[in-house]
Image (cartoon, rainbow, N blue to C red):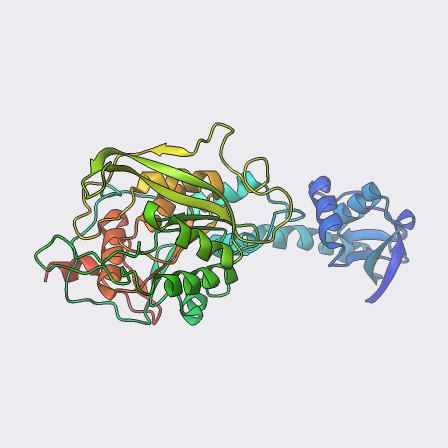
Amino acid sequence: MRFAALAVAELSTFAGNPRRGDVDAIAASLQATGQYRPIVVNEGTLTGRVMEVLAGNHTLLAARQLGWERVEAGVIDVDEQTARRIVAADNRTADLGDYDYTALFELLDGLDDLAGTGYTPADFEKLAAEIIPRESRTDPEEVPDVSEDAISVPGDIWQLGPHRLAVGDATEYSVVEALMAGGQADCVWTDPPYGVDYVGKTRDALRIRNDGNADLDDLLGGAFASMVAVSRPGAPVYVAHADSERVRFEGALRRAGVLVRQNLVWVKNSIVMGRSDYHYRHEPILYGFIPGGDGRLGRGGDRWFGDNAAATVFEVDKPVANRDHPTMKPVALIEAMLANSLRPGGVVLDLFGGSGSTLMAAHGHGSAARLIELDPRYADVICRRFQEHTGLVPVRDDGETVDFMASRNR
């Protein structure tokens, strides 16, 4: 076989080619990536049909459609029987293959867009729905009790179906990097500590780790820097916060380069008793974007998946099961925001996993969550919550499967 750039006008398709290809899709691929594979051309001295394409007939047709003058080709000279065998084998061997659909999903998910791949957004969403199981065995709002004796240890990374959970400090970039495993976040939804000391109202009087005012600025600065480093340019960001700490939270986001656009409001179905003159019945959520990205960000751009009626107020009932984690957000609230900013199959990052509500929302939405949780006991809660809801057993990064439901019953 010799290789050459041949004139399109001098080539002919194989008259009896049984394959009916999508010329438009191939043309889109040629426009997006160029010709990355030569066609196979038979010189024809033994068949009487000069410069006949045996493999790549639809690539030739697409090149003609695009007005190309030349295509790259491998040139052979074979008899009639061999030419027919090549045409038959070229078509049949493609039919005999199969897909690793998880690998295909990960391949497509790693692209900025689907241009030139032959896949449409609808194809991607269907694929995501097929590989991300959504069986529900419990109410997604149900949260297991915290156990003082943790299975998880700092440094663990848990695979929870399509989701991943790292046990460690979100301010340490090495932890975030290990969690993402070379991937990027398409969206961020996170609920950092609010800068208030809280002791859970349980018999164990569990203190929420990192909920202290003194180191809040360092905590937010380090975590948000890691967040920006592992997120796609232009990725949407949602950050829940206390109203009294908005200046510090917004300042930390802006210093990290985040484009803060709006402050959204979660309106609860009941007040929260406190010392303020007016009892709070809402919580704010900052909304913005990772710096960079092409085109319009948000509604009107290609990364907005909601409708045109989205408003700043989300009226969602407060979770009941929140004894151990007082700031737990409802899964329905998070999922509603993900539906606007993340396509099914995308990746959402939560730097402060807490009880795992972002993971549960991502699972219901059909996307993949990447969580970090500092406290091993809460990492266990997330693993157990996911297993109870889906029936899928967590797998540690060393390959060991751990049944968190069995450990609860011991």
